[in-house]
Amino acid sequence: MIGQQGSSVLKDSSQYTARAIQTASPGQLVVMLYDGLIRFLGQSKAAMERRELGEAGLKMSRAQAIVTELRCSLDLTRGPIAENLAKIYDWAADEMMGARLESDPQRIARLITMLGELRDAWAQIASTPKPQVDMDRPVVGVNLAG
Image: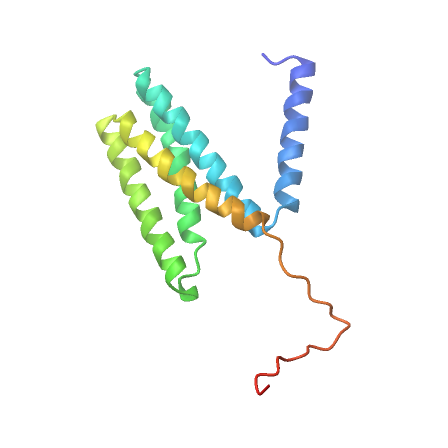
């Protein structure tokens, strides 16, 4: 049983997490999803290696839910980047299912590596400052005629 102090720490942690989510940009939210995805895959892999298949399946289910969320959040009308991400998420879901069915921790390790690279790309995008537009100034065009 969690003591009163432990309960307070958990409450503070969940409040911190809720605040972080509420104040995050869309790019930061995607990075958070990737962080959770990679964490659950790592936990599933570790449980699989310990032959705790129930725990491995539970953690894999959490990872699969995140991939589903990432996939469903794509706006496929935005062009080839969204379409390519959809293919990657579909592939990742297939790989997770295969790793789960075959109890293959090495397959999960490959997923973690690949998804970690995507996570890093999203983190870089999320940390890139957007150009500021001064709303009080008129937009001045570029003189292409010379």
